[in-house]
Image (tube, rainbow, N blue to C red; front, side, top):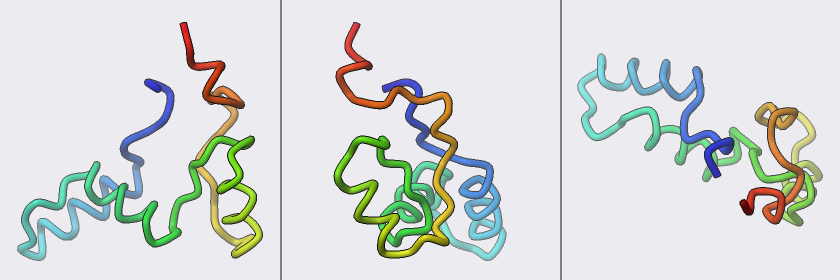
Length: 78
């Protein structure tokens, strides 16, 4: 699970901008979760059914770098 990101450089920049505009409780992790929820980020594992569904909805969604991630959750087990 350590390899699955909780933030990104985009969420950090987004968070910083929102804080600059006076928002509070908008840390990078919260912003990243929002980005996931609205479809800005597709960081599902490649073999997850949701990954394919989301890619089908909008091929322009830029997925997170999956090259360093395991292909399945069972690969995460010790």
